[in-house]
Structure formats: structure tokens, C-alpha cells
Image 1 (cartoon, rainbow, N blue to C red):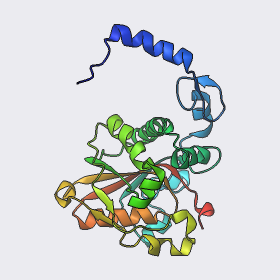
Image 2: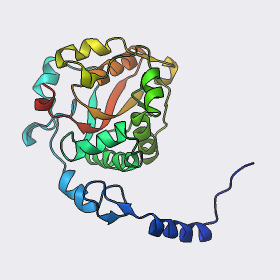
Image 3: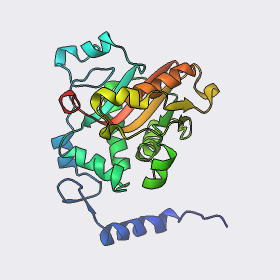
Length: 247
């Protein structure tokens, strides 16, 4: 039996009653509000900062329009990265809550912050979005893919088609956080494949993830997309780990 939405004249009072019965609290300061994070905390912790346009590492104000030295010396397979914030306290705690504690209500707010940063940068929109896939065993263990939870609301905000099964993880790799930095590139080598090459051929693909640390996972996925014929790959990550934290 189809489920029909409530008429607006009934839905609005019901939404108000639910907000009164189940008030929202800011995930950072605990204050009451309508969003997962209040406007005051957004202003305090999500300030725009100059970044390398390719890898989104912090950059000096004069260098923000240019690739950083690391990207010039060893260009990654992806072409650009949009990051809403640094992976640092207290926002790193929100990433962990989403990733390991099923706080899925944080994902729409993170998507909104990422969408805001993308619009601020004035980059061309991708033609489709895909989340970084989890391996089958980890997906069963966790019960959800946090990258997909972030990609769904971001795709709606960007009005961009979402391809949730476009990228496949064909090798069950160890979590990058448990691998020595020097071994992380080798850990994800050959880990990804593209399910439908015709869907990406000649197109600009956006890849969504919650956090970018060394960038090896996103680089490997971008390489798979480029081999499948993608013309451009842009990463969309909520948080970017500063270099000193993953060296």
C-alpha cells in the first residue's frame, strides 16, 4: 500500500510538536537549536581558510590559488579537493561519532557545510557523485557507510545525480588508521574498481568521504575512475587532516 505524505496544514503543526517533544541540542556545545551544530559553533569552528586547490592542505593566503609543492612534485590522480574544515578538535569528534557510533543525524549538517564550502570556492559542479565504498566485511560490521550517508544529502543540495554503487572495493583492505603512514599507499593499491565505465567516461566525477588524511585512498579511487575514462575527479571531504597529524 503506498504511503502518502501528510497535507502541509497537518504536517507543520506535527513538526512543531516533535521539535517541542524532542528538542535538538548542538553536538558541540549542548545548547538548544534546530540543527546538529548551532550557528555560534559553526562561526567558531568552521572558518574558511586558504587551501591547496588540489589536495586541500592548508596554504598561505598568497598561494591558495596554486597547487602546493607536494602536488606539483607528485601530482595525484584527482584534480581538486573541497574540504569543509580541518580534522582537529572539536570537529574530529563529530567525524568519529558519525563513523563509529552511528550518529547519522550529523551527516546532513556536514553535507551542508561541505556544500557551503564548494559554493564559496566557485568550482564547477560534478556530473555525478559517488561515495568511497566500504569493503563487504566492514559494511556488515558497521551496518552503514558513512561516506554514503554524507553523499546522499550532498547530492540533493548540489542537485547532482548520486551513483552509490559506481565504485567497488574489490580488496578488503585494512583500515588506513591502523596502518603505518609509509605503508598506506601500498595498503590500498588495486583496492577499487568501477562498476559501470560507461557512466563515467568523459565525465566529471565527485568522490565523497568523511575525512581525508594522507589522501592515498582517494588517490587510488581517482586512479580507478581515470582508467575507466573519467575526465575529472573532485574530492568532497568534510574534514582534512593537517600534514603534521599524519606524517
